Image (cartoon, rainbow, N blue to C red; front, top):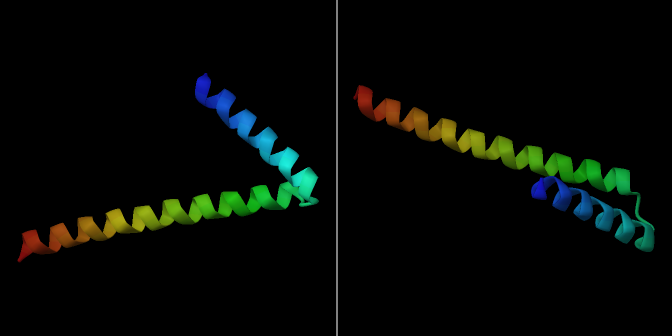
Length: 60
């Protein structure tokens, strides 16, 4: 439960900062989600490449 509470508090704080600075919170949240997705895809590609390298070494 602590993680969910922390996430909610961070989102509320980010929303407050956006309001103070005059930034659209929804567009910023969409941008953060796209960065998170990009990092996940990059990590998955790294793991897939490592698996491919191991398979290639094993078949030689």
